[in-house]
Image 1 (tube, rainbow, N blue to C red):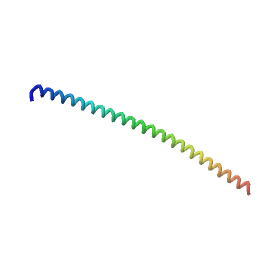
Image 2: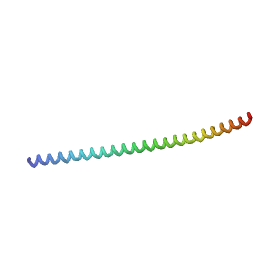
Image 3: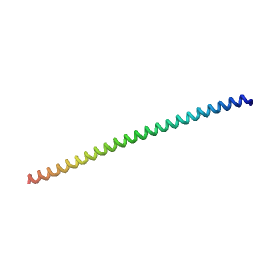
Image 4: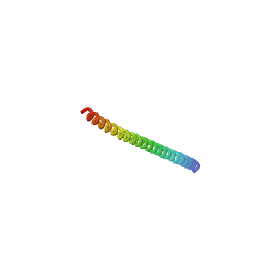
Length: 82
């Protein structure tokens, strides 16, 4: 191989390495963006889940209060009926 051909091959190898490095950077950036989006989505879902859990807890308390009220009312009605 002549010196000129060797120089051309070296140049092409350098260019190929640059392309490879750029590709690796782009892939890494895409991975980071995906991970960030994934983390944000999971965080949002957990917040919504906790909000729903709180709502369910409040409904359970209200339901228990209504059941207790109905029980008291039935007892009072039974006492009046005696």
